Length: 180
Length: 379
Image 1 (cartoon, each protein chain N blue to C red):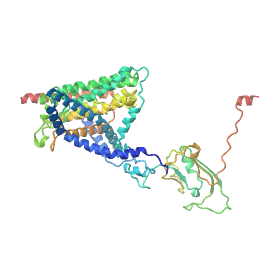
Image 2: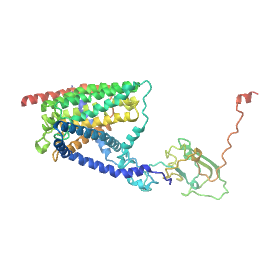
Image 3: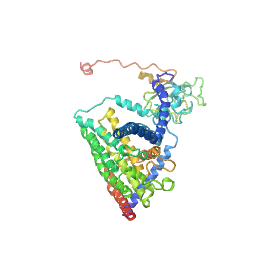
Image 4: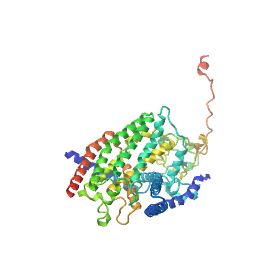
């Protein structure tokens, strides 16, 4: 009997507590924001107006690489969980004129290829944190749909090697080809 | 970016939003003025028609007005629930169609009307088509006895509360029918669960209603309200403040039973999304699905309204009285229903039954007992 009333009391108090929490959330600031309708200023009055540059802190948008600052450390490539970053570097000769990134770090590797496949990118922003020269950043761009998937392969390096030739079509039937 | 989109939708909603806001304001004024309006209409009818024809015409107008109001209410309530849900979860909710999305439900309704009306293979076609109407009828005909003001009720039945208990249980037949006719195991589970739940919770509902009936001595809802008039500030006589505070328990019990009867969360196991796809309306699409929604929100409003009538003094209020007071009180209770829905998790079937039989029914009997003893002592 004692247990019965204890249960009842616990139920009532915990429901009251939960309702207090939800009521508090009813009046807190929203975590989400209205999709900014840039192309439709007339509709602004019906959405939450977010002035430019006031996107939320943790917004995940299109990636950009300031390739001049890249020192080719490949930390972003290693950390990327979906392997959408592809970097190739070449060692710079000691005799070449020294160049420096914006923060003064000497650039010892020549980045010949820096590809990001935005169709694979999961917008986790993990690549942004380890970058020692802060050259890979999230931009406020959020509308970049394309009609062709290959358009999503963003090539940031200035000297990108020619894409490898597609493998030549071999004989349609490998068994017949090998067996003869 | 920089892409110009044809924004017909925006233009339409820009045009309609002021209309809707004006309409909502107008509706509130109209609700406030309904008694005068009704008196005027009644006078005119009695002056120009024979007594029988006047009575028939008056009830026809009453039915028409109620059906219109009750038909519009869910549209508003669905939008309201979506906004409450969104803000409790720190989201925005519908924002695009009209001012803060007030027209969203209209847009959804139009979409539902135009959607294909699918009847699955192997369904019992007749029952499948009949079920939504039965559910809707069960939910909406209960409004016939809901009093909005003195003399302002579609049918002033002297057995109003009995009628309410009878007609609201019609809905469970409709739900069971929908589940059975769908020829789908999830739908059948949903229908069976809803039938079990509604039948179980009928008992405490009836007992709690009975405790009020014992205190008032009448089954008529207008009598229930007039028993609560007067007192300090015109609200001290409300039933919730009477019977040594035990009516607070009665009020809570009736509210719980109302949630269970309307299949609202935390008692929404008949349509438990995570277990049963959508429960009894899994196979429904188009406007038939819409009718189930209409019925659910109509029933929600009705249960809240009945709670207001039984415990919170109906249309009587401390500062002014009338349909608007009733409406505001009912909306407040509807808000609490929504608030609970987004707070509590769903009960299991056994927990649901345990709550009914081990907690609600004993306390309902306690309230009934004390009410009976008190009124026996008074008389």
